[in-house]
Image (cartoon, rainbow, N blue to C red; front, side):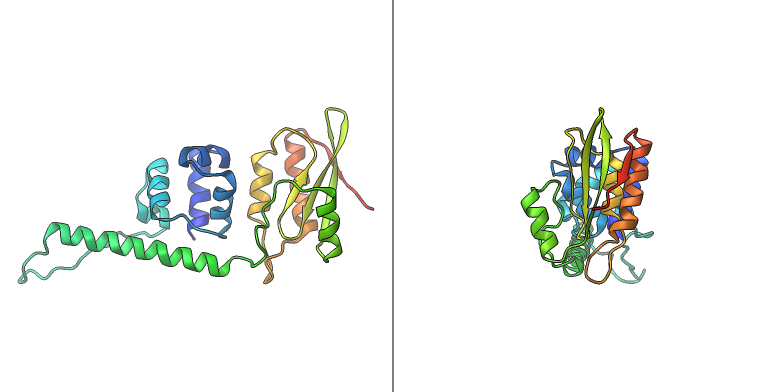
Amino acid sequence: MVGERIYELRKRKGLSQEDLASELGVSRQTISNWESGQTAPDLKQATKLAEVFDVSLDELSGKEKTISVKVETKKPIMPFWKGVGIVVVGLFGFFLILTLLAALSAPNRGDAWVDDFTVEEYEEMIDEGAVAEYLVCEINGIDAMFTLVDDGSYSHEWRTDLPDEVHDIIDLAQRDENGLINVEETLDKVKEALKKNGIDCESFDE
């Protein structure tokens, strides 16, 4: 899967999602959506990714072998530029199909990746039947909330950026057939990641 390959190559390069987004001139959320398989890079973005990771497009897509053209020795050799054109068209078709498959498989819940939302929006989601839980975290001696909703959206009340591991945990969380994550299980992993980064949190029971 291209999303998993992007995640592996990014980690190998030691880049955060923000670092890679800056290199490509896109948002961190775009990188997150690629890695979670919700969307896929177009041909231009894929070419730039391959340059950043110093790999070929085939390696980026996870294919072990490059495209080759079999030519019989008794037949005239195909002109060089015609062969190049076939390879380019083949790669374009591959990424087009990949993009369509990603779009069809993405949960039909609108843009669920929201970094922040108001109390009113949170209450509206709960009224609509969404499952949400949250942590109470101590930041510089002050209690702050981290809220996670089953569609994968989340919010936190402190000004510093979340550790990159937290984004990874939520972005790569297993989803059911409705595109929803297991909030309790994911929140436990978030709690551990925050603790490793010096932020102590406790689950909050209403």
